[in-house]
Image (cartoon, rainbow, N blue to C red; front, side, top):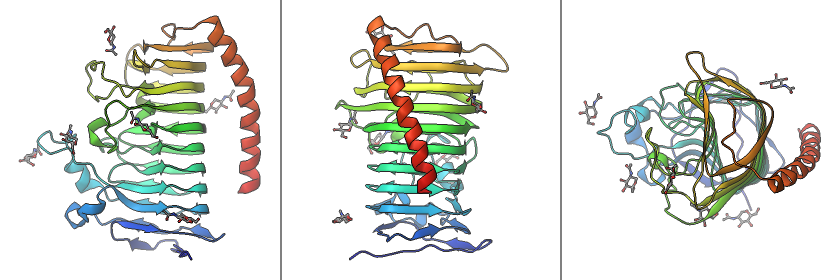
Length: 353
Ligand SMILES: *[C@@H]1O[C@H](CO)[C@@H](O)[C@H](O)[C@H]1NC(C)=O
Ligand SMILES: *[C@@H]1O[C@H](CO)[C@@H](O)[C@H](O)[C@H]1NC(C)=O
Ligand SMILES: *[C@@H]1O[C@H](CO)[C@@H](O)[C@H](O)[C@H]1NC(C)=O
Ligand SMILES: *[C@@H]1O[C@H](CO)[C@@H](O)[C@H](O)[C@H]1NC(C)=O
Ligand SMILES: *[C@@H]1O[C@H](CO)[C@@H](O)[C@H](O)[C@H]1NC(C)=O
Ligand SMILES: *[C@@H]1O[C@H](CO)[C@@H](O)[C@H](O)[C@H]1NC(C)=O
């Protein structure tokens, strides 16, 4: 027998939810309507050290819908100040993710706003079939490691009509993820849409050397960037330093990544960065209609061991992607199949919600 927990807050109410709700929450077919503001306690010292990594954590759900105009506020200011990114003499300890959906399936999240998270705003982990629509994320540009939406070990994830401003990655996708589609996304301020980037500053808590894994079948479409650093980035290297990293890679195989109609402004010279490992190169990267500019300088594409093709207008040019005719044929075939998949997904979204 499961529990049913309903969060119903009225407009204008603020509910202080104490830290570390870690429970098995199960739902019937009820919607979870969130209308007020759910605020985290702001003092890191009050946090239970045993559950330092998550605040609102939903585990083992099936068929759950979270919706409403509610705000989930992580009150992250003191956590940010204690970060090693803010002050080098602080230890790199990590902070809670605001909302985590873990080991769940058939999840819908609609309309909510995530703000000022302690670290990542919204994490989708070990889950299958998750649709996120009309979600807003808002954390300051200088808040450390506050990724907007972080996807790990998950399949069949659709993000649509989201507006994300943070201090770190707009959307980050790491090991064990496949069939991820994103459409009509606005990113800025912050960093871009990233794949790879495991274990930076211990922020993800999954620093594992070696091993193997994958990220495949990811599509970004109709993404607008506003003054973000590295708008498009694949990074298989461990370190997070501005200098070139050692050839110390995650050995995660990254393939079938499509970027279509991505435009806007880059804060960094490397508007597109495909930093793949020499031992496990990235394959089948497809670029179609990319227009990334920088207000005060030129932009460029960086490639290391990255194979793929670009077509349509591509700015900055991505000639550094290596390709072979064989890849090209496979890519074109995949794309046709993808197109069908995409339309059936949209059909599902409209009928399901
Ligand atoms: C997850 O939920 C299912 C029922 O949906 C249950 O059978 C299973 O024991 C749960 N797993 C855990 C680890 O709680
Ligand atoms: C950095 O942290 C150390 C110790 O936590 C503190 O003494 C120092 O004043 C801090 N520096 C800044 C610039 O906040
Ligand atoms: C990351 O965490 C590990 C273990 O918790 C620690 O040994 C290491 O020094 C940390 N890395 C950084 C950059 O602080
Ligand atoms: C990727 O995830 C798989 C399990 O899903 C794990 O076995 C592997 O070690 C992970 N690889 C890395 C580099 O973290
Ligand atoms: C490209 O994406 C933008 C959003 O950034 C959207 O407004 C525009 O309609 C898209 N163009 C096409 C041809 O779909
Ligand atoms: C990895 O090492 C090779 C040579 O061993 C070098 O050519 C390449 O640039 C290195 N990659 C990165 C990203 O440092």
